[in-house]
Length: 145
Image (tube, rainbow, N blue to C red; front, side):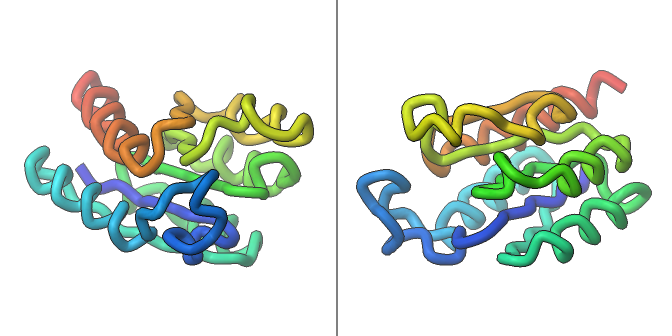
């Protein structure tokens, strides 16, 4: 199983960015946890972070045939990007949307996800552990095929 982990804008700032909301764990720390769990599952992960919507859309669009599933934290693009939504829908891969915080417990504008309806599932509010759970979910989903 090969999984692509995509992270949207400002997630490279984790560990110092609003630690009361996002915690103190860095993106590198989260990805190290995911990679460790992937080894236990006999899986591989590749990760990509960008602040640019188009770069994320391109990676998703090129994912078919190279990966078995996606873990996506669109960050602020969750609430604004029809382009990301369409790319996820078009790629045809199982996709788990992850959020470190719980968007429903935050500002009203964060309550609507444009991307979640085309994802297989969504995990939110569990910090970096949500990424590990997403990997485990994809392992279960891809083993059902």
